[in-house]
Structures are given as structure tokens and as C-alpha cells.
Length: 229
Ligand code: SF4
Image (tube, rainbow, N blue to C red; front, side):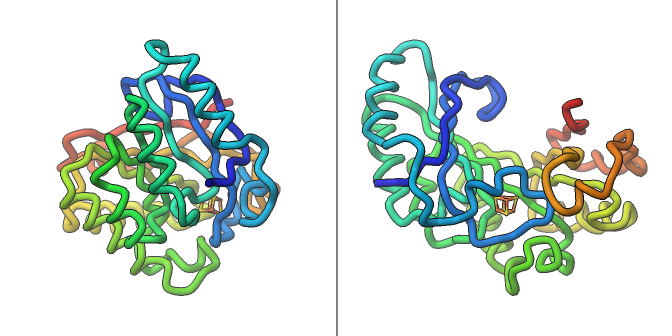
């Protein structure tokens, strides 16, 4: 049904306030230089675990796990994701999605089933294609963001940042965009070094964010997340 590149059986971090199993779905059309999951990028790579096995695992964890998080790669790249999410919900689990927002139509179809969404906002819109290495990526994410905000589904927008991705002053431009769009919940997480082409050239610096008080103003929830050591 869906190709799953890996699973974390229990996490308290990937769906805030819930204990979740996290499924890492195979395939992503973007090529961010800092991607930490390059083995998940090829869409046609064989899965590491079958969805039937996941369902058997979930049946054994009833009452111990609250939710299943569909992560990736890019989960919405898989055409049968909707069926997989529906099956998880039928079994009584909550469902969450981590997405880059690149398939707004797929997201629109999924939203009525979802209990929480973590949406990556990678950069100010004019910087998007340079980061994703895919033309037209910003318009897709803008559409997904609007669908998510209109849906009423609980969410977090999050941005992974280091100065080598875009300059500190543009963080404030990004915040202005988020506020105009109506985002109320945003986290800024430090680029974790050690993953991709960008990371290979860099030491792990302190998370030096320009004027965090100003960045946080206007959000109902705001978090700064330094990279794990
Ligand atoms: S969108 Fe995510 S999974 Fe895809 S290349 Fe970028 S960082 Fe990797």
C-alpha cells in the first residue's frame, strides 16, 4: 500500500503531547542539501517494513501508543497515503503528518483525517527553489499552508535554519510572511550538521539567532530548538 523506509516504534517528540509510532515513508522529489534522510529519497526503493507488519505492531500496542506519525521522505508523495491514514484511524489511533507541503491536493484530501500536522517552511518564498533544488516549490507550499490554516487542524510550522542557508536578516522577512499568512505556531530549529553537502563543510556553531524576542512577537507559540549534540 505504502513504501515504508523505516519505523521508530515509540516517540514522544514527533507529535507533541502524544506517544507515537513514526513511519518514515520512502520517496521525496526535492533535493535539499542538508537532507538527513538521503536513503529515503528514491521513490522506488524497496520498503524496509510492510504496512501489514506495521498494523500488526499497532494491534499489539493498543493502549500504549496514542498515534501514528507519517513522516519521510515526503509522505504525501505516495498516492495511497490516504488509505493508510484511514486504516490507522479505523484502528483507533490518532494520525499526524510531517510534510514539506509540496502536494497541496493530496494534503487537502488528508486533512479531514489528520489530528496534527508539522509543516516545514524552509525559507522566505524567494529562497525556496535554491534550497529544494526544484523549480516552483514555493507556490506549492504557500497553497498547502493556506489549506492547513483554513482546516482548523492543529499544527506547527517549522523552519530549519543556519546562516549558510539564508542570511539572518531574512529570518525577519520570513516571519513577516508567516504573520501575513496567519501562522500562529512556529518553531525555528537549528540545522543539524553532519547530514548533507552543506553540512559537510561546516563546523557545528552555537545557535546564534538574531533578535529572538522580535522573532517570537506575534506568535501564540514559538520555540527555538538548538540542534541535538
Ligand atoms: S524535503 Fe525533506 S526529505 Fe525531501 S530532500 Fe528536503 S529535507 Fe530531504
